Image (cartoon, rainbow, N blue to C red; front, side, top):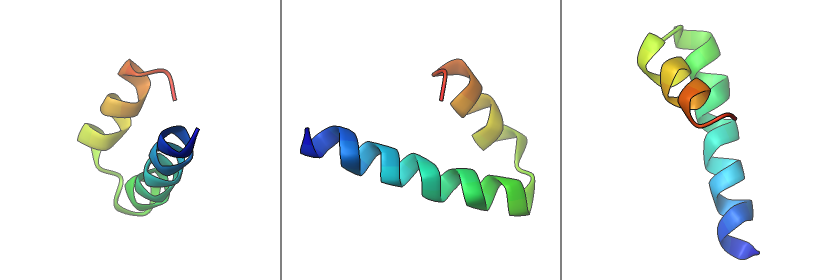
Length: 35
């Protein structure tokens, strides 16, 4: 579905930024939602 594709792209973008910035909030957010 279109929504899922957008959500995945959104999460992927934040995943890259979280790794570069090492922001615990984003990492914890992703871990809680299981990817």
